[in-house]
Length: 365
Ligand SMILES: Cc1cc2nc3c(=O)[nH]c(=O)nc-3n(C[C@H](O)[C@H](O)[C@H](O)COP(=O)(O)OP(=O)(O)OC[C@H]3O[C@@H](n4cnc5c(N)ncnc54)[C@H](O)[C@@H]3O)c2cc1C
Image (cartoon, rainbow, N blue to C red; front, top):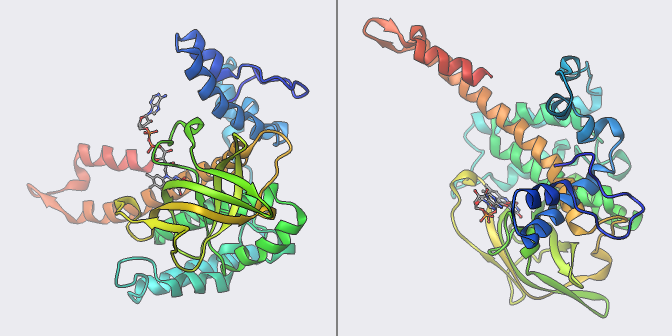
């Protein structure tokens, strides 16, 4: 959340965020207000990176709540044409997935998206959509990427979700936005081609909503950070991935780009379990024991800390998640309507029934 009650930019002393003040006024303890405020402040710091017209205080939804009257015009999206070369990457990506879907070759024997499909998607440029052209991607604007995810989710929501994990919360956005030139040149071409796919490791067994409880730590030892701790619920993590790891360094949240080995070993193991929502891909825990990461893989942030980096990606991820959900709903609609016209009860199509019609209209939004 973000409002006018932001800390002044030149202040070195943290000022109560809106959430902190609201929680205190609502009778929460100072400790809970302070810890929730730390998360809210990371959101505010990300917000300050955007031009004023893209900040929450100026968004149509915010103005509808806080101003008198609803600025209806601002809700209308402006015409936008996706550049032809980017459109081509998107169309080829959809065709690749459709072809595998139609020929029954999308999933492997474990029911997961096959590596060959992920590789072919790399070949047509899918994984590089959000990477700039100078680093081997196609530099898609987010307003083209989000509607594209809606299309992809209609064909396969998991593959749409993986583009969001890779491009928004995984390593692409943190390196794109916060990486130095050396890190960008070293990491982005690999991420753009899909030779390296990425994941995002923030959640821990004891830290989900409450990110002030993070326990995974990294300590500098010569040219490396030594990581110890456990992450949980990490989407798209398998050996060999590049992971944006949020961990504590000198008692401050920080982000390290971690190059996972090709196989588990005594320093890195995966905790395996089933998660129904992501049954076509991997979601696993990661255990680090004295795992060494080169110190040049630390991302630096001018204002804020590692949570600011995490929230920058999570902000994109929130939009991507909604875009994917819209695609899933369209897919459901596409199968509901013909069925409602086919199915007859008491000599009448159920599409004529008020209850069914109201459900269809709710689904259509
Ligand atoms: C499908 C899926 C994919 C995921 N992928 C990733 C990933 O790639 N990387 C990653 O790092 N994490 C991932 N996660 C983890 C996700 O970010 C966490 O599940 C989330 O942050 C919530 O944490 P938690 O599960 O520990 O719930 P908890 O924090 O334990 O919360 C449990 C419940 O209590 C409520 N609650 C908590 N605090 C409050 C409060 N102060 N006031 C009111 N209600 C409260 C919550 O809303 C929730 O309903 C994934 C999770 C899922 C389900």
